[in-house]
Image (cartoon, rainbow, N blue to C red; front, side, top):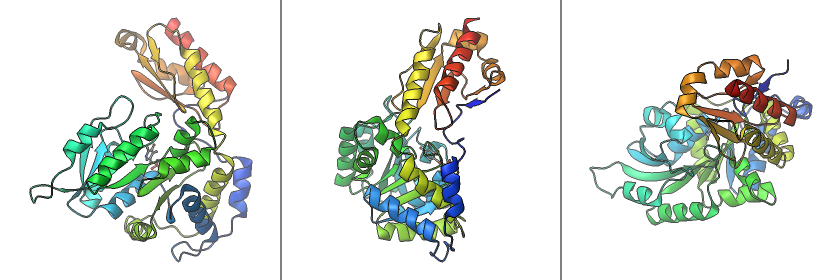
Length: 344
Ligand SMILES: *Cc1c(COP(=O)(O)O)cnc(C)c1O
């Protein structure tokens, strides 16, 4: 039986084309700065997203951490959403390793941080307070896209108070593919106005591992030092960089296929009694079980799906993520398996 793995868009395997690019990649020693494939990737990402420089890192978690440590000194603080990856899902690294205080704010239903909340959280220059230094946003967040208007307003507010801006753009290209037009041009527009952006290549873009952090040459020089201190300097990393560069060249426009499959899945789940499904904006579908149904049928649900070859996560709130190793047949099978379980 074929497995349909909807747990995350991180589960993709490199395509034959990507594997060929990895095998053919010229290699050097990236700690000496002379791995040509890593340098090519960094240059391509920086140029295409409109930054001076970029740095290849083994994970998005390390990329965010290194970005925070480059922007903030000990005793500074970053303003961030409660649900954002670089607050909630990174083991408290910024606080533990960076001595940077997080100032978490509630996420609005659309994934944004209320401007009034940001404004109220920015602290005056006073020895009682940590120094408010940085605003972190995430796009997409929970599969939702932050609007260009919102980004401009949040950036304006941060600038008026002298804060720097970091974007956790792990799924930047999904946000870019959700709007009409050229995906790369959209991505570049989203990045404008941020001092740093972190992009994951191991999610919808389909590379096995790796993230790229972008910013000014000065910020990236600092990030390189923190990356070393965080243990993330790699040597012949060119094979991995070549996979990411291949994804950048070949997998941007196809993200729209993932978004179409997510909509197809959401449509397939519509009308099941006790299940609320929101129409996805990108590649993540959330399906909420009403409490009564969750109590009655929730416990065995994921195991039942797994027995049918469908892997998902969540309990009351199920999460399905589409990606390049999922097709229409798989998505239809997943919807049918869930419907069969909940309606019987
Ligand atoms: C996955 C993810 C990360 C971290 O990426 P890893 O490579 O898994 O460490 C950071 N931010 C967001 C929003 C993510 O979804």
